[in-house]
Length: 575
Ligand SMILES: [Zn+2]
Image 1 (cartoon, protein in one colour):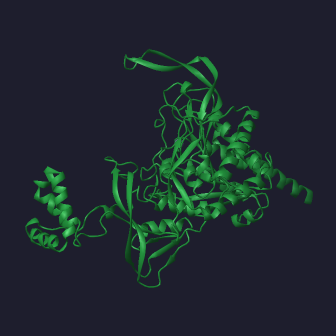
Image 2 (tube, rainbow, N blue to C red):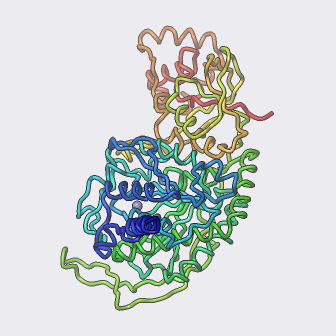
Image 3 (cartoon, protein in one colour):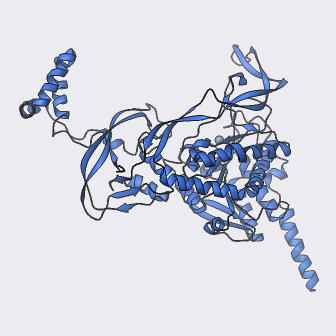
């Protein structure tokens, strides 16, 4: 009787794991799981296996919570403990662009195969997934929005419930998804982040391409280890699995003869954001023209390869990250611009197709096409060295007045340590006057983003209020802090319009009344009067324009508001 009971449990277990097939498998790789199927799938794995835990983590704009799936052999799911045990922690994000769902299906099978022991998750790896990140987009299922893509039959849409591209939202956090992601990210503090995509662009033979985060931002040690040690192992591992991988192909219609550049990933992107916290970011981009089935299988193979290599290199990976973090807390300056060095390159064994030209059936004009009957293999130059410039000295601290709570909240969300002033305090600080910037005339991801920012530093005495925030630059979050608070940062809060209110003058004057006061100002300030006369001499339009002169006097007088164009995050410099 007892034997029969055990047998029946075994049969149930066997049935519920081995017989469990996802939509991808049932349709022989033609279809992708729906959002609800994916969530049910993981909940079922959680039910039948002690290795899997599914939990809700924060909200999405679509009104559904994000889920986090945690997989660990010992059935323990405390990320802080994982790190203490020297496990390599991997986070895989799927469906950020739900029209590119390869990772959704690949990870469902991967988790199932770990549960039923088809694959052994190494004991020194903890694996976590976000099954579907852009839920609103995933629910917006259609068969046409990926015009160039070869399957699946149905898929979601790129925009989320606010029509945002979530892979531009990692620093500005317009979406609830991005805020929830930050919570998940800092809870896990992953050593490796994988964000699964499907590429657009040129045609070639490779199914899997890999966008690796720009090495240098991780710090010389960790970045160098990634480039010279870890990444080559992934390429070898994929070749052994018969998926010949190349770096993300970063040329659109040009021939590869000129070579290709490594993609520069500023922090609005998942991998660029992860780099700010010394997490190695990988963005697998399968090729859109390859059948969905092959794309999913290669995504599965790459996930597995990263798991294997993370396990084999766990000690080095963890040690390099620790070292990078220690260096970050002491860094005296950070570069803000990275440009590709066109003199330094390695070679990539690129398997492409010859290009040809023929008359277009659509437009009647000449068109380019890739001739699949003419495949080639070429050594292509890969420019993957970036030169750093625009170094900004790290201050001892930043001060942010509490009125800018939108920024303060996001800093807190990213585990930035801060203190509040106990009393109103007058302080000597360095302030930036915004000298120049450009805003995009049309919105980009809901913003008229500022770029080309030029600042003029001035020393000022400023009165701060009780409760204003002081952020010391002695933290592991240092790279994030400077990247977000220096207005010249690619995806800084200033770039994303959080401080635009200071760019507008709030008070002014009427010319007829100001004229009298302006005369008074000049009488009391002979130096200003000399400056005015000199400007008139050198600029005849100015000399003939009374309004311009009154404005000049106003802006150089105590009547002009000091906060106009003054960036409201202040620096206390190191002595
Ligand atoms: Zn994508």
